Image (cartoon, rainbow, N blue to C red):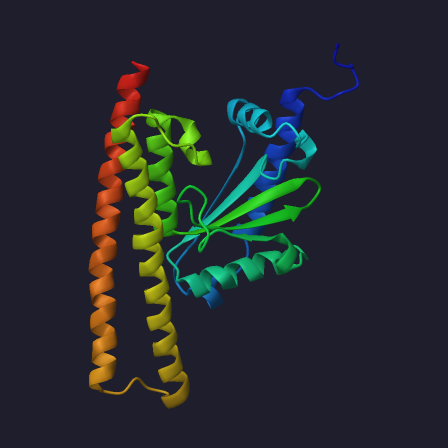
Length: 249
């Protein structure tokens, strides 16, 4: 079937979505995040889908037409933050764009997709825009898993299990690190932060108390574990990046 001349070209469509993503990125970046994050500056980036990833998505789900694909235009918000602060960021962005948080949020932290944990907002602006809100740990895990997918096959991003046993174990271990390692760490860190906030709200100052010292000790242990996780993820990603370069060569 010939394509009607009246339809826009792929390049024209991508220019539209690129401009939409860039405009949404600029608005989110321009908000005052200090009341929620203090002096922690978020990383706000944007990108449209490439023709290859867009084609793959349309082929996987033939029932979804292009105008209904939510993440052709994507914005990513990453910061060093707790789960509660991540919730607050999602609420702020949804409110800024006059969206009902309950209808536009996609929370994948307790029910991860192929190990992927984040909060997504599906915005309907002049076109559809997906805003990914991730902690630094969630983002580093996702980047590492993407590097693994470039080598083992993009299918692992969609719950498909590699046939090779060694590859299967690698995928399973990284997914478990996300849910059983990073997920538990972030939940416990959020709980400790709530405890400290409650103490300060109630007493004004954090008292000298063995129970408070124990909380601080737990937090210090979690800091050490987080540093170990970050180092491990960086090493894994570096290995798969090297394998991808050799694979292309």
